[in-house]
Structure formats: C-alpha cells, structure tokens
Length: 171
Image (cartoon, helix red, strand yellow):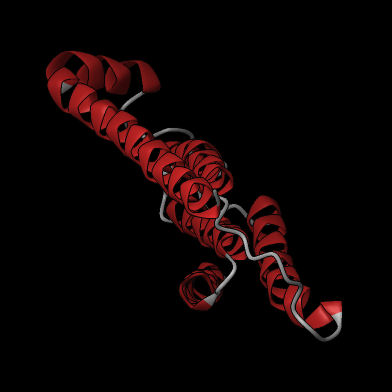
C-alpha cells in the first residue's frame, strides 16, 4: 500500500512541478508549486521523516510561498487580462492535484505505516536539531537569512525602478 501511495505522490509532485514551470501567470505557478511541496511533504512522511515533512509544509509551502507572492504583488507581475474559456480549464488541474493529495493524506492517516511504532531513538528531536542548527551551523543560517533579505531588497529595487521609468516616459 505504501509503495502505491509513494508512486501516486511522486507523479503528483512531478505533474505539479511541470504545471508550475509551464504557467504564464505567476500566481498560478505559485499555487502549483505549493501543491508540489505538499506532495513532497507527504513523501517525506511516508519515508519516515515526519519532522522534515512538517518543516516542508511550514517553511516552504508556508513562508517561502508567502515571500514569492509578496514579490509577485510588489513587482506587479500578474497579467491583467483573463484567459478565455471556461473556468474548469484553469482550475481543473489544480483541483485534480489537490484531490489526489487529499486522498493520499487520508490514506496515510488511516493506514499509517509508522504510526504505532513510536519514535525511533535515532531520530533527532526538535530540541536537538534546533541546538545543532543555531549553535553548530549558526553562520550558515545567518548567511541564508541575509540572502533572502538581499533578494527581497533587490526585488523591491527592480520593481521600483521599473515603475519610476514608466512614469518619467509618460511626462
């Protein structure tokens, strides 16, 4: 059963990633990327890493996607025109991928392969992981946080200069 769910989740992650790459609307691309992150989180859970699965949802599907949407809104990248055709052509794929993810999640909740085993001793607790992350690898964590800050400032600068150039040309 776990093998079948794994392959279904793998196909779902690949399909969502492919849809993310091929979308012209950046907001739709972010929605598909969130779908891919949820599929990866379920794969991590299925492989016996529930803490990594939780971080996948919290950090990537939560915080990073909010940052992406903030930058998309700040740079005004979303197209102004609506796509022609019925709405199911636009929302059908994301609804299908979300339904598959929901079905896999419910299947894992009902038939959890690792639920009754308890936590093995070789798993690091969140406390041990946090201590290692902010004590042993503190410099790497700070470098990554500065990279995210520089990316946000750079996106703001690029968006501001584009809007400023458009206003100067109109005058």
